[in-house]
Amino acid sequence: MAAFIIRRLLITCLLLVVISVVSFLIFTLTPGSPFPWADLNPKITPAVKEAYRKKYHLDQPLYKQYTFIMSGLLSGNLTSIKDERPVLEKIGERLPATLRLNLMSLLIDTVFGITLGVFAARYAGRWPDLATSIMAFVFIALPGFWISYLVVIGLVQGIGVPVLGTHSFGLDFKNGFQVALDKFWHVLVPATVLALGGIAAQSRYMRGSMIETLGEEYIRTARAKGLPDHLVLYKHAFKNSIRPLITGLGYLLPALISGSVIVETIFAYPGIGRLAYDAVLERDYPLIMAFNFITAVLILIGNLIADVLYALVDPRVRLE
Picture 1: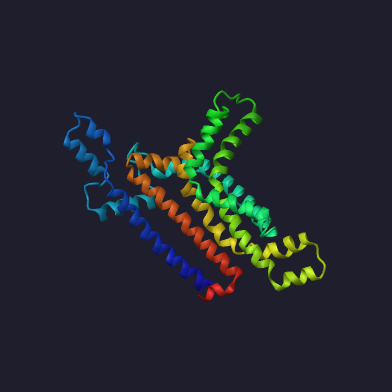
Picture 2: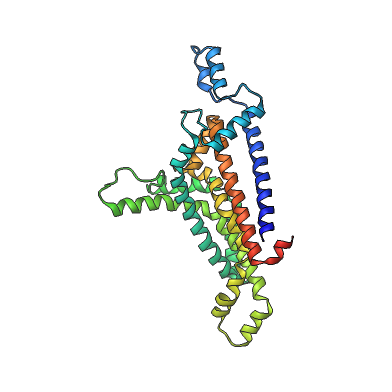
């Protein structure tokens, strides 16, 4: 098991280096300048522009720029071009909001995805299975930004229910219950939109795993003994059907963090995703690199955890 973990760690480190290099090249070679205000102000001389470029090593070869950004990021000294604040400090300020959003989305995704998958498997081949299948395919096919816009237009413009930001305007902050309920609502709506695609995918995985498990010999034996259907389904079949979802759950949280950029932007939610969107528009290379690097670390850690958990569940994986 130790050799398996070490091998996965080495692969993870190699992938992290490759991802950071590719991300750096994509953003630095993209047309545009991190100092657009300098080009629009005729009073700023070329010498001043060159001084800003030297300050952030943008006049250096690409490998030196990459070394400067990565060394600053790993040491915690990398600063944003926009306001010269440490990028880790800016990300840390937005992290709690994104964690609340994504943990709520993960909870909704897991509970409803597994529940719908078990429900569809129980009625496989009948109309409840067909209905959940159609719903899953619709949610997988519909773009997240389109659903987000529909929700915002329907709730805000349609019936006047506020969903943008983290709280409504004009709240009586002395009423703690009202404030807590309002903040919960402002997290629940974007989290539900963010979870729709995951619910659809999880339900399909769970349905397929449950149907396969229900065809096993020990399930037929349990039914032959006269056990009620709910005991066969939830006590015997469910715990063995959940194993294939371990890998998917390992990927889910980092995927939500990287995928919340669109949802946070549309719902004006002040999280890491909105910060990354603004950084892309402003060509804030250090902040973009920091966001991509942290997202890559989370994804690779999620993959590593999923691999280790799956190896613990199925020892045959360790021999691959």
